[in-house]
Image (cartoon, rainbow, N blue to C red; front, side, top):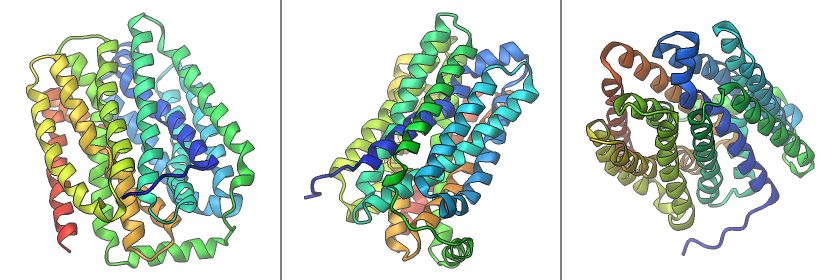
Length: 385
């Protein structure tokens, strides 16, 4: 039996943080076609904005361990959410591409702190069997993606400007940050010196298993990022539909992610995680291959849902397996692994955009099953070792 789950206050606070963070992360892909028309640029612009956001995200990811050592994880999370909200607010009033880039950079700085510290807070609350709790809390990332894309797509379909929508997401992030700030006393983790944080990171980097987890996290971020960022544009371009249909595409993918993560949190015990990850990746190759051949939007939604179910456990479960198999500081490990996963997410946004400009959206989407196949191969090797 997998045992009964027992949630705590910070579990719910971290779920809210993921919900808010997701809205800011998927706003750009849902609005991408509209933004391209308004600013008269190509699809590579969307990938470039995501690279700018992700570059800032990686910078703050690297620094987040030192920030949390001084301020505490919960206080740092609150500051990160407020930074995302301020960036979204500036994004909503940007008159040209240069201010958009700056806003994306500021959003990325806040997102890196949130990305780095949510899972370590959950890990601290549940050091034994954290994989189930991590899958549950990470499901709220997908819930945020689902709700954000449906609401944004519908409002754009009703010809509401993207700017007030961005303001709404800004308000949600700021309010979520304030809520976490009010819960900062729940953070019982000890403050440590920067030298101790740096030493923990050195120990992790030297661990023989670290390299394989880095590559797997990169690929996990790549395949999830590819469909999160480009599924809306794929449906709009391939089937000549509007923003609402594009929102449904991301919603279908996110719905699969939600079901997958909640199922893993409920049904999959800790000692079966790595074997189950391999089969999830292996079986997920099929819907990813079929997506470019979908004859209509409805079937495409179904394939995106199945792909979401398959990809759902990758990110949180790989972190949990790594923490269990490597006797190192879990917070520093999670941060370093996120430093591998986030560039994978951004690489998909950028590379698919380049291929789309040159050869069409179908050519770009073909990168996703390739990434799934590589991840399944590495998981097979990890399972056998």
